[in-house]
Every structure is written in structure tokens, then in C-alpha cells.
Length: 592
Image 1 (cartoon, rainbow, N blue to C red):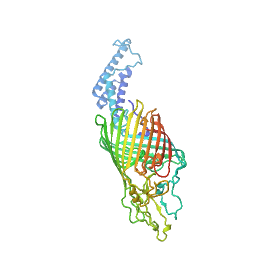
Image 2: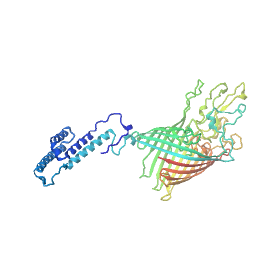
Image 3: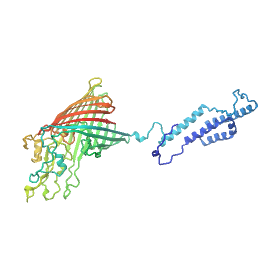
Image 4: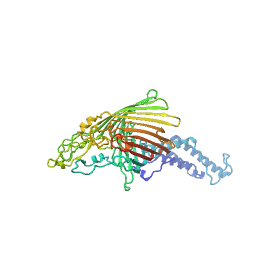
């Protein structure tokens, strides 16, 4: 019988109940030892032995049938010992049974019937295991029930990243996100002669060491309810990347709440999830970054395989709050900003079609409606009179990368006493609304016994794109996506509403086993206003829209769930001033 040792930290706060099975085992052992005593001693203790056995029967420590067998055996052995002593004193030869005479110091071991020994052993084992399971302290091959409902997972990545810029790139690439994060940019040359914040476009950045660390816990609350929490690294609170850049004077790195959600499955084919969770839609990183998590509520549906396992249908509905209007803006105004919250609503339906064991096609169509995300020109704003802000400052994006067409959103009134020297600090908003249609295709096939191929395509179109409506909304305030000549008129404006991607992957789709490999080749083109530039891949062209180019990569698993990979991305602008950016990433990845 094995009893698990406990460390001091594992001692329960309540007192343990007496271990009756152990006491019974000890008493039974005492009986056996007493019955195995020397013959002379047995004769002297005959009355005590019989009383002991009868006491055990009366207390319930021994079953009556087992105790009676032991009692009869003890009495028989006592009688036999008495006869043996009498025979030994008369003739110290052989015993009356014809056996060998006992010598002084010899021990007679009494015979215990096999069924009695089996019964004692089984009863003690059963009662000890029952008590251990009830109290949760010593069940063999078992752990606490709550540990079976908890799943811990995570991953780690170490990356060396290099960024290469063309020497012919424009050196005036305004960082509009920095302007929106600050107090605005004064566009009046009489009161501001400085340049706005500018992006680096010509100086290479080589061998930037970066890491990503994520640790998540998922719990099965019941058969239908689950919960999850995940922590992740990240240089900032932006939604598209959990990569943390090393350096910074060896300062400690930030850790963020990356996910926190609850889900409920009312039936086996539907799951509802709320909180902050991974992107619920099937999409490429042309539209949504692989690191993107969303807030809100989503419902996923999937049917079992139909037509003898050849077809499965899936779908997703989601409502995502992108940004809420501040409750107290403008802070110094008696009239607060009305409810102008920004939302993303999406719906997707798709199917998996398995032609045979070697070929599978996955296809889906989706519609995404971004509500209230485009910029709005304010009413006349009396900043010179001490106003803290303008009534449409809320319409600037909370987060942006680059590429979308932007417009000035403040109608700043001039000081009638000194109109020429009135500062005009401006913010920018998105000039186009966004209602996207998205079609995704993926074909998996086996080229040979050891070689697989995956072909992927993604086509996106902004159904809300309207060039003339953008200029009317901006009231002449469009600030980017013009031709390279410097003119900022409607005739020189360049944009578009379409994005697409093609990619081929060879080898293993997922690298899990040692020796697996992967190679990929792809091409992307993203027009400036095909999709919001805030949420897509931050690596290709360093994020955003108005980008086109190719990428190649490969990976090799040198151990289980551990691999090295390399990827080269060469991209440049679609319209406007030249901006060519190549990115190379060398990574060491592992997951658990």
C-alpha cells in the first residue's frame, strides 16, 4: 500500500479524520504477528489471543466469517502446541504427527487460509482507496479534478529584423499618427515654421532584436462554458503586434492583457464568445494581422461533415466596438460630444469541401461594415477664445498605420483681431468610409507522399469608396495620396478600392515534428482605401495600405514544436511619392 507524501505547503487546514482502514490493517498485523510467535509463548498467551480475536470481531474490525476462521485456527494451533510440549517432555524425538521435533528457539508459523488473507488485503485496499478519493489525497494515477479542466499554452519568438529603404524614397513622409496622438499640427506658416513629424524613409535599420512572448490559460467550466485569459508582450498598446523590441537601456519589458473571454456552446455546432478574444473570422493578414484580437461579441457556427464526410459549412457573426466617445469631451464645454461610437459589424459564411484524401478546398465570403470611422469636419471652432477642442475631434482614428486617404477635421475660426496670426492646430481623419466585401480561397493538395502544397487567395473591395464623396466630405481638406508632382488637386489625387493576395506554400502546413520544412512565395497589392490601414499586417511595407510587392520565406523544424524561419518582403507604394521598403526577418520560434 502506497501513501503519497505531502509537503508542508500541502497540509490541509482542517484536521484529517482517523484512518480506520490503516488501524484495521495494524490490528490485523498484530494478530498475524501474535500467531507467528514461538510455541512456548503461544501457550502462555492462549487466553489473551482468543480474547483479542473476539474483541476484533465485536468491534467490527474483522468480518465475522474471517474472525471465526482465525479463532478456530488459533485454538487448533494452541491445542497442537500443548500436545507438542507434552510429547517433547516424554520423548524428545519426533512429534506425534511424525514430523521433526521442535528445538528450543524454533518458531512455528501458523497457517492462515488463503481466502482469509485475500479478504483482509482486498478490504483494506478498498476502504483506503475510497477514503483517499473522498478526501482527495492519495488516489493512484489521479490528480485534482480542477487540473483536468485547465489548459496552459504559450509561445516564444526571438527575431532579428532588418529594414532597408531605397535612396530614391521621398524624404517627406508625414507621420499622421504622431500628429493625432499629440496636440495637433499648426498649419499656419505665420505661427509655425517647423515641419510636422516625419517618418524615416531613407536610413536603413539593421539587426533589430525583437521578441514575442505569450502565455494563456483556458478553463473548461462545464461541458458548455469555457473561459480564457492570455498575457502577451508588446512595445505599445497597438492592436496589430505583440512584438517587443529589445534594448532601451536594458529596461524591463511591458506585459499586456492580450485576451480575456468567456464562451458558451448552447449546442455542439454553435459557440458564443464575449470579451477580448482572437479574430473570429477566417481571413489573411492582408485584412487582419495574425496578432489581432478583437473586443465584443462573436458567434461561430460549424456543421458536421455532410455527404459522407465531403462537405462542412461554417459561419461567423460579430459585433466589435472599436472606440467609444468620451463621456466628458470637450472638458471645458457645457455641451458634450453626443454618442458617436465606432463599430465593426461582420458576417462570414464558408464551406470546407473534401474531394478526396489528397485534396480539400476551403472558401468563404464575408461582409464588414465599419460604422462611424470616417472623419467629419467640425463646426467653427473658437480655439483662439480658449476652447479646449473641436466638436469632431472624436472622429480621428484611435490607431492608424499609414496609407489611407486623410482629411483635416477642424474648421478653426480665425481671431478677428489678428486673423493672420491665429494658430490652426489640426487633426486628421479618414476621408473614406469602409464597407468591405471579402472572398477567401484555400486549396490543399498532396503532390507526393511527403510533399504538400497549399494555394491561397484573398480578394477585398471597399464598396463604400467614392472619390467625389470623399472630396465633398473633406471640403477641400484632403492632405495625402496625390501624385509625385506636388499639386494637391482632385486631378492629381490617386487612390483605389481593391486589395488582393496570392500565396503558395510547400512542405508541411504546420511545423510540429522534427525534420519538417516549409517554403512560401506570395504577392500582395493593397490600394490606399481598400481597407482600414489600422488592422492589417505590420511587417509588409511596415504596415498599412498603398503597398504592393512580393515575399518569400522558409522554415525548418529542428526539434519538436521548435523551428527557425526566414522571410524577405520587398514592397513599394501603389500611388504617390516613391516609398520602397524591404524587410528581412530571421526567427527562432517555439510553442507549448
